[in-house]
Length: 208
Image (cartoon, rainbow, N blue to C red; front, side, top):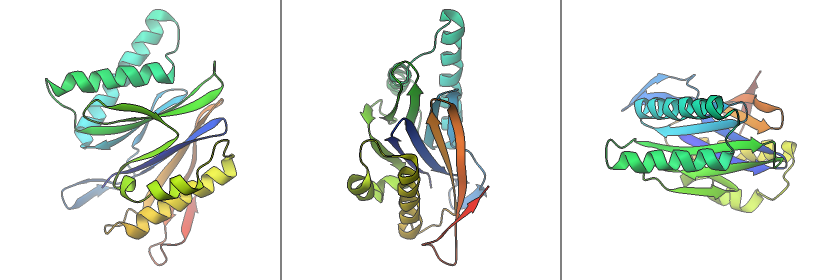
């Protein structure tokens, strides 16, 4: 029951993902981080089969690191998106990965953040906001209405929480816990871990 939400703000990218890991009807753990750092300024948010997601993300991380060591330069977010898309497209004809992704990053050279949508079929699209998993069924209209260019951090965080409330309210199986991370010029940081109050799903409890 994966839910990923992300959007670009003013000089930052905000990405949130649920922390549930399950199989079939069972919840195996509720502290699983689906927002995987590729390097100091890029995050790959994954949804889909846990094994495929872990294996594919490790493949991308290792090869991006190898490129940096060999060439003594960082890949841009756009370059990582193209490389990731190529790996997904190539795998379709060999051993497909059942994984859908949001790639967020901040490029120091351009001094701005960017977000990419990628799916298991090898599709790739640069977006201002988007979602993967079950969240994509519920938050599109909210982001259409409330997202705007140059969204400052406080308004962006409130918009993210609005999306998370909607996911928990509409999804028949409770998600309970979400992790929010931000990428800006200083790198990747954990904004907060939020718990949906089971007694009142319109409220969010914050954990430090």
